Length: 125
Figure 1 (tube, one colour):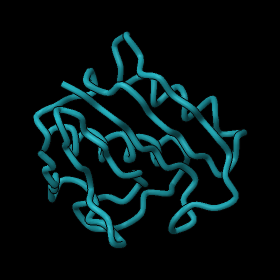
Figure 2 (cartoon, rainbow, N blue to C red):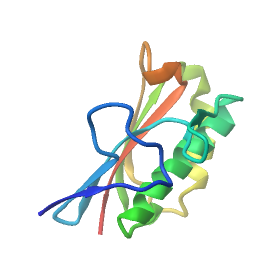
Figure 3 (cartoon, rainbow, N blue to C red):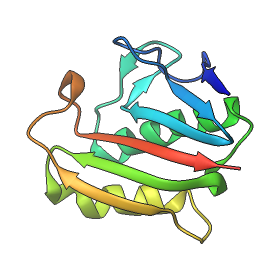
């Protein structure tokens, strides 16, 4: 059974999509960018703060689905500049205690709202 996951603690969708979908105990979360859901403002001070906000947004979606970071099985990281890989990787990694998810990281030409990083996840109970 498909269930739409929505929380005020993550950015509202900026297009025709859901924040996340829970289907058969698997959560498919839409890509998250560094929008602070408290004020709808982008957090673009630096790549570290931007990545922290993205990971917090992912955490809010996980919580809304009754999950946490340990439930993530796959991530996709999209970077505007692969030179930011090291800093993004360090922040991303700090949200896990081990048993890291499968992942790919790619550089892309452009991201929504001209952000520097977007991350999507798949999680499972």
